[in-house]
Image 1 (cartoon, helix red, strand yellow):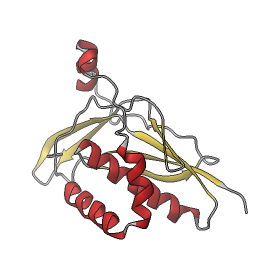
Image 2 (cartoon, one colour):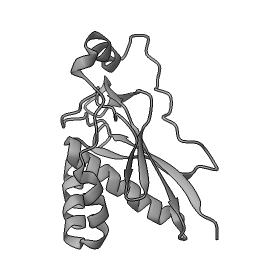
Image 3 (cartoon, helix red, strand yellow):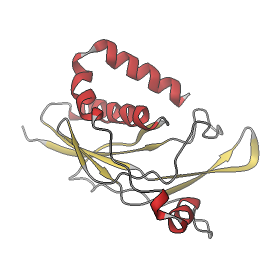
Image 4 (cartoon, one colour):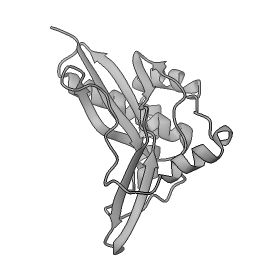
Length: 181
């Protein structure tokens, strides 16, 4: 059997139900400072701002909510079959830990994909808008106020303990689901 190298994209989500705006705090300038190794995975800055525009129906069909974020890439290698289940579980755990560290709803935005099929990338923003995104305006106006962030050191230890501690795994999953709601 050959190893499967994979990647997934993790970032903030717009809201729970369709048309629900992001109501938890969201730092649109937060971007990961550097790649970090966590439990055999590499968590890296996605390298570009993602701007998404969503209609706010059914609250207001004419309304638009804009979400600006700096997604991160999670990369790993699986030696087990089916590799997708293991990679998905690891990606979800990382999204839960980032949500806990940053107190905002992060989730898997692109499910694990073999690196041989497609290289890691943040997609282009959609639809294109002519004005500069607010995140870019904030970073340009005062870059010192919005430096790239480091992952808290406790994430490595937590990630290593989660698989063997059922209570922690369930508590983290329940907290994360609540935040996503």
